Image (cartoon, rainbow, N blue to C red; front, side):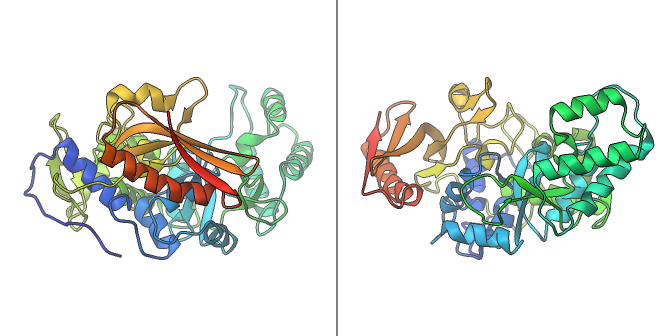
Amino acid sequence: MSVVGVSFPSMGERLSLVEQNRALLARQGLLERWRAPLPEVVEAIGALQAQQWGALPVALWSRMHDFETESLYSAFERQELVAGQFLRGTLHAVTAREQPAYSMVVQDGGLNAWQRTKAESSPRAEELREALRKFTDGVTRTVEETCVFIEDWVRANPGAIADEEAQFQRERKWRPFRATSDFMRWPAKGEWGSRTPEAFRAAPCPPGRGPGSAEALETVVRCHIRAFGPVTAEDTAYWMGWKVPPVRKVLEAQGDLLRFTDEAGRTLYDLPDAPRPDAETGAPARFLAPFDSVLLAYEAKRRQRVLPDEHRAAVYMKANLRVLPTFLVDGLVAGLWGSEAKRGEAVLTLRPFGKITKAARRELEEEGERLVRVLHPRAKSRHIAVS
């Protein structure tokens, strides 16, 4: 892999928001697209948000040269990539190599907890998770099949799940037992495509069968720095869904990390060989997918390095917990985009938040023309509209 403009500021040097922005863009392939095998790119840019499944190809296309959507599905089929409930308990795609560490960190962070009521259940209830793992080990199981299996287990183990809890779970088709890092998503009919995989298999390496807690935590903390650094302890803890103190302890224990400060005086941690381009480095126009990782990789109120505060409400939809697709101008979110195809005509619509220069508009339209071909390859005609 190539990197852009590596420099090594002195210990404790203050990094401006622009310098933090350029470091982020360089690591994410948003300054210069990556030329590397897909699994290597996924590790470089961090766990990919996947709760909107169609966003994955857009996120990778924006960051890779010569990306083809079928290569993504092939990587899942070969289990070079896996999709499951990882960071913050939401659906992510990670590499099979790093999955054991992510799964363990999710477990240790309490995000695998299945119980949803205050009813007291028997300690034997944890046996159900192990039984469900065995039931899905190497075999694709639908939601319905897992529900039947769980109900049979509950009947065979009276008292293991309290009646109140069991009723709550039944109303939700026992989802909390599957929405853990013990399992990965898999298409019911075995064909990967544009729809979110709705069936399940046991994860290649469930929590407890891979690295220990300390090793897994250190690995995932460094994954975050590698993909999104320089970062604060609060940033990393938010991204993981953990509390700050144990994350800060791990960061402070890493003797090789460089320390900087941000404009608020907070400590930023970074890997010594990570790219940190100069503030003057140009940033090309880029399109970000819905729920793009760069918009969710930092403490919720500290995302100004990529998203200006005045545009936050336009991007994050609190009512339905959505993060809208955006585009970058000079490295910062400058508007929203959307696409649709009707009667063979595909249109990519750009909605800038304010005035953009003619040069930026031209660059966005050129980049958008390439994106709309990826999104709607069968369209007979394609257009860019600016509203």
